[in-house]
Length: 400
Image (tube, rainbow, N blue to C red):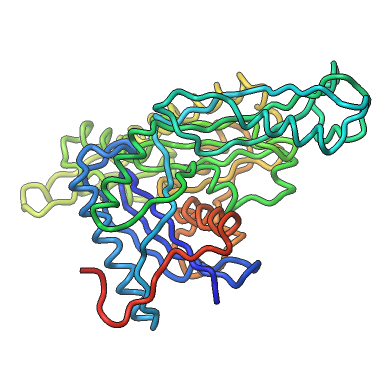
């Protein structure tokens, strides 16, 4: 029997649910996924549990409807939870172990690894990911593998990605109202990285930028390990809000202009009309036009703000010149016209879109980079829970 998993993301702009399936030990395939606009969520945090629960109910129904159309009568009882938002924090922790017999053995490495995974956290924090980094033996730092090195003290540094447990519990409450159990919470950006990066890119140095509606996650890999990660409180909805304020439009009109007309580059394409007709249902509104150059200037300013923050974080970690494999963009916000090119110019790095390369089933997706995080969450489920079932068979009928 195939192993089947589900993952849920309750984002600022949309609520996403995906189902993945794989034969034991084989490559994962996304067999069904759906998304709907989120309600009751802002900046990746749930403000209204009842509204968020309604969104979850709607996306559950849509996925189960699509499953039935494919001839599969499965109802989803469990899902892995993708987490982002500014409540996600990252801390470094160094563990130490005595080298037992003068040379580092497997037992010594296992001991220091256990110690690296025992950092105490406050009661209101929940671990999303623990990434082991580099070893040290006495005064020798930056070791990928210390096996058989002589010395007395073995050290291992790890990155702890953790989140506000209250925010996670809010998501569990919203899902629980729809009889959906949420399993391990996982960090959206490192999940996206798992789905889109090759091992060679991790060794050469690469940054994954997961651009969501309410925030942007980042994860930088060097020498094959996670070097830094975090969340910046700037996302696609901030650009929409800037447009709405600058041109006195509704949020819906601003979002439509962002998607259809806006460009992160100010002088993007001189062949386009110099003025843009505002979308709207009333004749008075449809008679209004705005300058394309002005629209792009507003968008450009917010994007450059985000890129300046990223540059500062890379410089602080001494990683500005270590991105040999460039930058990989994921998330729905990455589709903004000119975004990738402006990022390339601002940071001086190669930039590519991050379509998932380690899962199947997204070949016909128009913007596969928007599915990277949820694909990575399904990969996590398959890697860690291969022999467990998360679904039950139904004999007719769907979710009530």
